[in-house]
Length: 389
Length: 152
Ligand SMILES: [Zn+2]
Image (cartoon, rainbow over all chains, first blue to last red; front, side, top):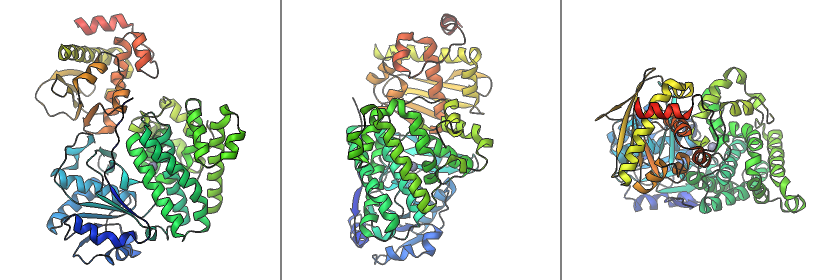
């Protein structure tokens, strides 16, 4: 066996984590940071939650769109230089954090176009630019991952950069930032994190350290995801979900994901399905597709889901199937309580775009690491409901 | 010696791909999927390299001194040798972080599948059984592709 594992981010996690912000800025010689966020969070005054703890002068960029592009990144880079900033603080969900990673890389690699730095594991250590990540959802785990995905609107493609030099220096996980998340978003981002953990634990790039993070994430999510629906303001539950999202991010950043993400990315690109929703619709059909090769690993997952009794009562060869059944019922409960879409049948016009989605999924790097080989027809079968809707 | 073996296999794989572009519709479909010309470099750190030009709907040719769209670099001669002698699959090399890639990751997936396909023809079955997690159908006899790759 040979594997690599990288995680260099310092984590400030828990109640009042943001009160440490000024200190960390000082640690990284940040005197005039650029704060990045989106319009929604800005309108909801999330920036104030953050700046309350900053006495430094700062610049603010609040126009990061939901589907951020290379143009946004290049725009922000110019703004950073114009404003004489000396560090980045990204506050937001996956799109904001991925955009920030793109800006960070452009600044540290001193490149003119983001297209010059695409690829994986190709970049060398660049110029030091302090970079803090503050997630406001508990799902993408982007604060922990070595990957940034941005869209190229003219070419209508997603571009990917994977590098050990992309991680933020400090991540702040403060429950105050996720307490007001709508329940449906909470459920859908939570299932995204669960999918990261399950795919990380069952894909062919898994390794002992990524396993440890994945197991922890599966345990934490299963213990908290239903609780949070009934107690959305509970700080401990919110913190646990933020931690689980971070842990799942650490796991899949070092082991990759699998077919759920390969098809999910394609479904997002072609049919504009929100990422977490796509995960919620695809997780069960894809686990059923993978079952024959992942039986034992899925069996382990049942235990990590906290189902000790069920595990001990189930014959070994049925453990994997039981794990799938358990997750299916969890999704159904979330659907009933939050309206989380859990059926591929709810994707409008899917049948018209099935070929395009399958074609795109086939070119997704996540498919290489899926334990079971999948060709275009296999993907079409999943989308057509051969493994359940 | 290691460098020489790698260089020879690189040439052989290139010729195999060039032949299959005309003899196996899947190779043509994969490469034409780019819908435009592409320059590809395959290299080994401190070792040999090859740069191939793909011309849309025409095929492949070797070129020199161009900036490639996709550049795959093996991080060591030892692991490159394992891959080029069929002891390690491209997939395993990827899983073990044995190479880096500059360029569009999604677009490069086509190239990975092409290498798998050419290996199906050019490497003996006992090897491809080990390194490929599925067996592709062969449209033409291996011997014919071999002869064309060597002498065409
Ligand atoms: Zn995800």
